[in-house]
Amino acid sequence: MLVNDLKLVGLKSHDCHVLIQQLHHFFDIMIHLIVHLVREIRLCGPVFLHWMYPIERYMKVLKGYTKNQYRPAASIVERYVVKEAIEFCSGYIQTTTPVGVPQSRHDCTREGKGMRGFNVVTMDRQQLSQAHLYVLNNTSEVILYIDAHKQHVIDTHPKMSMMRLLQEHNRTFLNWFTKTIFTDDSTSKTLRLLVVGPNLNVPTWKEYDINNYSFYTKSHDDKSSVQNSGVSVHGHSDPFSSAWNNNPIQVSMPYFGVIKDIWKLDYGEFRVLVFKCQWFNGNIGVRQDKIGFILVDLQKVGYKDDPFIMVAQAK
Image 1 (cartoon, rainbow, N blue to C red):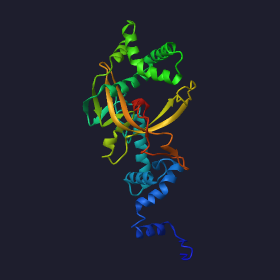
Image 2: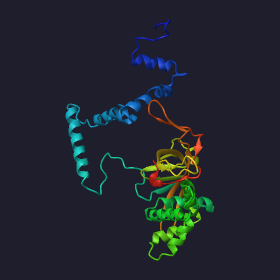
Image 3: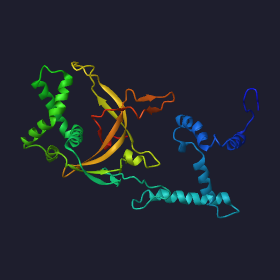
Image 4: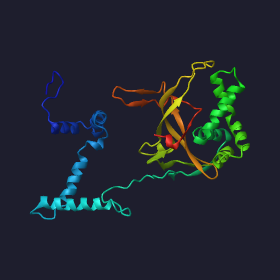
């Protein structure tokens, strides 16, 4: 120990752990992990890919293969080969479960499955129209009608700025879309159901399992020991520098938020799952640190007029 320089030198790994245990009032195991984990994850990836604990556990499994104390190595090899052969053969038998391969606990179907907190809520028309408009804007069959209505607005208001034209499009599209579909007998049944709109009684959940993930709402997340309500979406937008600017700026950026509600909009013969989110301002509430991690300020809320996303878009 160098008292003048306040340094400890010549310590080995065991000495450091003993010292940490003696100073456990501050340097407990959690502080020790925080000091190292962030840098290790940045350099090496997730912890389970480079820690020795799985190897040590598997060594215990191999030792359990020893049935002949006089020939332990041969005994381990023999049982290991048998295990590998069985697993290889089971891959060609669809009705069996492979030995030693854990089954996913998530629902891998396209529809997913609600897990907790099921309820049916009667929504007000303003919120429901907001969600319905987002579904229309993300349905492939409706895209042609969206483009046609934008052109209709431009033809009707030739002197209006581009920003105000988009505002007029968002305000009048639903009524125009309804009239257009009902006056055209050749439209598909899906479009006619979309025109009618979703049922006011909306099934909701606190937890929903889909896309190989379990998504929680923020209220349910606050009661849990793990965090499953955070989502990010890579979105595209066309902001304007002023109300009279006809040259929107093409912007592509990630958006970060938390799930406030999980809705399943009922259109009669099909249903659409959407997340109602609280987004954080990407301009003043998101930054990248020197290591490369994204830091989000949860106090900087933004984009309140566009809270909904499709489940397939959530990351």
